[in-house]
Length: 200
Image 1 (cartoon, helix red, strand yellow):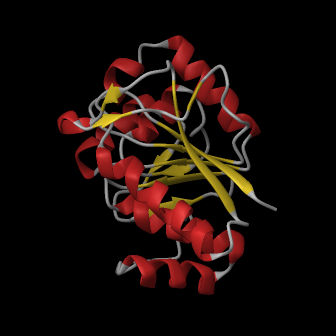
Image 2: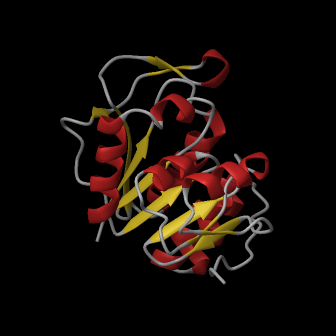
């Protein structure tokens, strides 16, 4: 089964938060005869947007025409803060997370899941500077401060920025086996920090 991996992007999104997972899923697909993942970006509106530090990015899809995600990745960055007060964005995230096989976040992307109620009853993490804010936004979640990523099954969260790469490799391993993930990490020349990810 080839899974759709939708990566939500928005103004002032942290670059490695979305590019790291994009690289992991896209490279895994490339190394496996294009049979495993269809990876694409999605934004609220069409046209270019400016990511963190001015990187210009053109999304593949908008909310209106986004293929149904099997894996939804919500990255972080300072751009998450204004989105917390955007019911249309939060409602879209909630609806897509509800129907996805896996709802994953990187860094402060977990704040958007918190606002959407996705983290209720889950163990979750985020960037180390935002643990208290995550607790405030998700009082029904258990915030864990000492893990690179946490896998609850349906909901998977990672700590800050580069931790999204570790989380994505973990998801590749979960879905297609450790050997596939290790081959991707080797190709990327990335030292995979894999602590198993199980929520505790």
